[in-house]
Length: 288
Image (cartoon, rainbow, N blue to C red):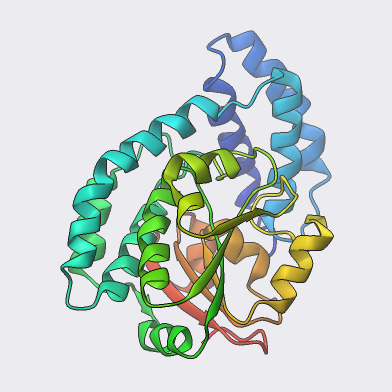
């Protein structure tokens, strides 16, 4: 995926969401918005939008001297953990726990404050449980999982990571070894090691960080250790739109679980905005 003209106003809108989490001072908002304009002007339109978004949020964090999303990340971890017992019961009592856990993991992808100012988690959970994803490669997903013992799980956002816990627990209960990856340092509301600990995932499986503050998974910006882990992984489960943007052409067997939350991604996929996807990519780089 490449930067589309429609991405440019979105860069500014997302930046304003971040800035307003920290300050209501219009003069400060204006100063920082003007300061990120060079990042937008220098956008490499041959690359995914995640590259430019990463530069923008580095600038915002530097100028504000704080992580704008720290408080809201913790709040939505707590909200999701409050939901966890009932969601765990739903998963364990389902006829196909893997199916239910995967749908709930996709539902959790709605928790994205880099894009949204508010989210309807309960409504999205109902939709996920009542309807199959618009792109539904579940049978291939189930077969791929049954054919491997080791899985690399790329997490996305805080709060959402509690929904990932349901799927990871289901995989571990079926005898799989799961290694979950988080960001190396804060960017937007993406999950870091702190979120992994808060969600309880560190008690279930090995958790590593990718050594990067890049949006999505920009492999050349990740650590050498993570790159080796990714290369060696037999199967990758990738959560979130940012990971889809940055990994869709990677020579790797990947299952993308996410919601298409922006018009550009939805247009590329030829799907309505808000669609849920469990999408298979083969090592040839072709999406099926």
